[in-house]
Length: 155
Length: 155
Picture 1 (cartoon, rainbow over the protein chains, first blue to last red):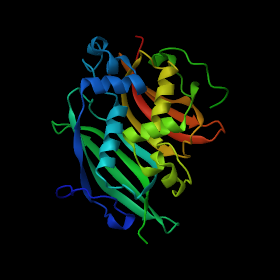
Picture 2: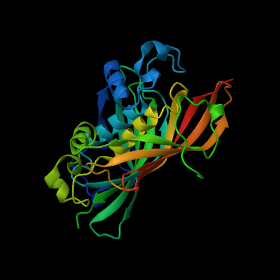
Picture 3: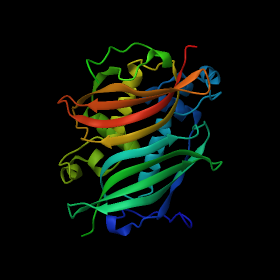
């Protein structure tokens, strides 16, 4: 966790990554309209789509679906180029916590840390575990989760 | 886990649920076009959007993003009505495994099981943990995960 996140480059292979390395994504701003459109398609609870009903919710106003935070984080991670062309498959997700709501107008970004890596029996692949932390413009951690994935090896 | 999943009804409150209860969702069929459109927006790895490149991947053909399986599962769960109007907030996701790929033309459905529940200090809420298993038309388990959520109490 020491030091600043590294600038992203395209397509790290398994051998290129070291445990503890961190990478920052670009950031994205989320409008109320984008929150409502996403929720209408995927997660249409009242507090994601209806301003008035949302005012009566435990959040006191409209909030984005946690799934939207997750998907925006995925897309930011993709766009960072970190695993473009080298990711072979996603294996799973762990320890996912929705820590704070996504609010209309928020600008969010993600920091990805390499937390574990291990070679596979298949010499063309390796397994990597990453922790992804999604933060808003106030520096609040709003989503934390880990992912396990197969990555191509150079050799 | 004994017996058949129960038919869904709308809006279970915390008190209505018992550990071990299971609920079946409706099913949904996923076209190749839907797979490509989803991936272009959220997870544009070549093996989700490009038929020719996908033929060279470890899956030997185009597959849907695991995130799409997750979001379709969420939407099927929402549509089952189980927590409509009673879900207060999602807390987290655990033990998520992408076990088999989502393939063009697949028809998938989900079974939700109540695995744990506990009262909150706030008497209007309770915490519920559910396990959701997503299966394809061949009966293969393709996605398994748990969710923890806050649910309204009647009292």
